[in-house]
Image (cartoon, rainbow, N blue to C red; front, side):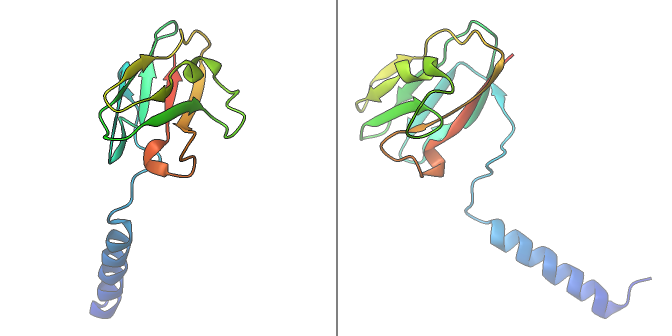
Length: 126
């Protein structure tokens, strides 16, 4: 049996952990089956998608500003060149990746804001 003091410490630590996580995105958000990634002022959604080999992924820019979506790593963009076909998207514009035929995980980001986590994600090709 825990003492009341120990139980209080556990509750306080749990509360602090919850408080510390508020407002942070989950970098390991579970991937979802989708071939569309939407860009808004809040970032990309979903952040992590699963597609079948041979699929393309459509990037839709619903933000009020442009984005330049490219493959990881920055600045080389050579992990998944098919993503680089998306490139520069003006507000309201959409474009697909090339056919994603190699089974792997491809990271992507906005080349013009490479350190903004909200504009980073991954495409898992199965």
